[in-house]
Image 1 (spheres, helix red, strand yellow):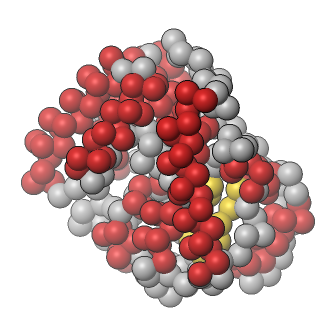
Image 2 (image 1 turned 120 degrees about the vertical axis):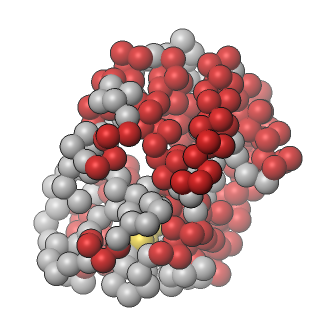
Length: 274
């Protein structure tokens, strides 16, 4: 979709999906939220659809999400620079200013709910903005764990929600088969041209040369008023326990559904669990 990094085609209310069905290059739509949203998955076509789930180390993903959202609510200049890599020439850009990363996150959040709930989304989104402004990384994690134990899902602007592997994969498996789904560690693909060619062959049915993957996460070059913790420290054992259980459940799910592990970097996924 030209000029749009993450179109959210299958999340948007009233989206005309037929306008995106065409002959030619494949349509690429990427969103972490899809794997967490059963209604978005239900809208995806079953035929000729391939799902690639990109896995990242859970601790590093959680820190990256916290840092990204902390920048959005607190560091205006960095937030504007972060948005440079996001769509501005699209239909969605009329809902937020070009340098308003927080507005962009609010737009994404509202996209996943019916418009009649906009006032409630606005209210609770702002409540989480205020929480994030005051909370440290550890405080935010403990708050979200408590929130989930009471409500059954994470709060808006969650930093933990996308750090678990099993729940999103289970959601995808309700509609798609093991032939449709590929699990990937981007760092492993970045290091191997032959592996990238193998992935292309699996997805498109024929192998082609692929360029080197530039792996850089959007908030890496920016700093906030906290440093990334040492996740090997025992103080993080409470979080380690959650992630360890999730990884065990993932292993079982992969075996039960005979999913390929060719593109997963197990060492990367487990480096803070040992």
